[in-house]
Image 1 (cartoon, rainbow, N blue to C red):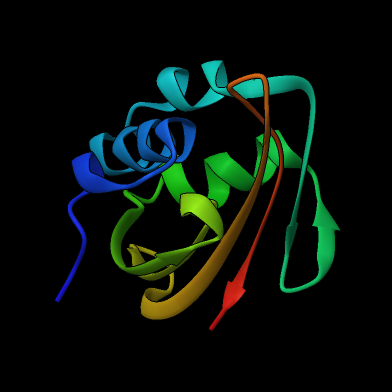
Image 2: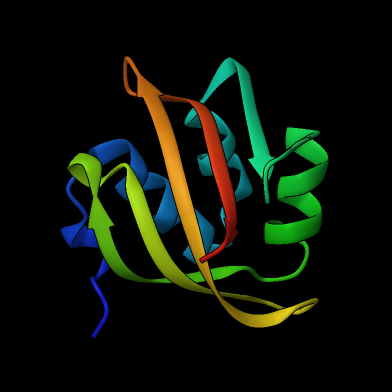
Length: 107
């Protein structure tokens, strides 16, 4: 069973998942703090390059399976046109309604 994005607990994470699933790059970027960072499978990545390559040019989509840490930690089935579907973990650091950092990787 999945959790609909509209039912996610943290409003910033909710907006991020909604933007990803809608393919709305600008809405996602608008949620990022000016100095936001990210990591994939424990390695720091160039944020703008990563979101284009792994989300927005390849139709990324998340189906959230569970949330914890007030909605800032998710386990989701993530799919895109490059890798297909995989179970992933996402952890967001949110400050003042903006994403300062997120980490993702296989769950």
